Image (cartoon, rainbow, N blue to C red; front, side, top):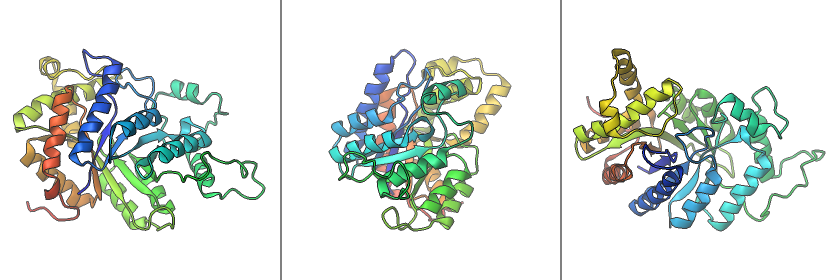
Length: 342
């Protein structure tokens, strides 16, 4: 079972934005040595808790510091960008690091409404969702499928002798699942924050997949999960306190740096807070190796995922590395589509 990593360069309490960016590079080198399949970085804007809004730049830095792992965007938020610019930047990455780059695309702006306007104010902002139009334009550059009378038909995306990296659609609802299936590309479902039913998204993608020569001939579905694994269940629960308090803060509109486990343990949670956190734990898998392996296999048995992409937004980088160490050790025991007893 391929295991991959999603890292958002979260700023941790007591640390700086540059610390978060360097931590992402350090983590990438670590999981590369462990044999992880992919390392994806995200795009968010105007969030004090997230240090990077430039996944293409981060991907280039990670590629330069790793040897074999695939590196990509999880994802580029296409509404924020001219499709030509996205194509150029990822073709440059593909030219420098052939067969190691992924282009993951998201439909949301990855920020608040006002910041999304600032990102697009020089791009003739349209009030409606134009993600599909931008996606078609991006793919037309790569596949040379503009109509003969289209003004962009003769634009060459440099370097012209390099193909665009594989496209993946990211989603937290059923829309991207259906669209990814229709156009024949990979799909990654963000179960770590989605409220949409994971089975509907994952299984509808698989059942509706249409093979496409030059893209994918069979479906490939990635399930993104939040996982905290430690040597014991108790230690994992303690570390996951940082995630709990972060989720509670975000629910209240506070996008603060990741708190320490000590800060989370000392927080005066109300009964309403604890009910919210209990519900939110349905999207976070926490425990020692045995408990986590059982949980991952249950996800695999029901969703039929081809790959797991793990996010571990804990405070301490060493604890995060240890979690990925333990996950790598259980990799051979994870099997997609095999029912789990009990």
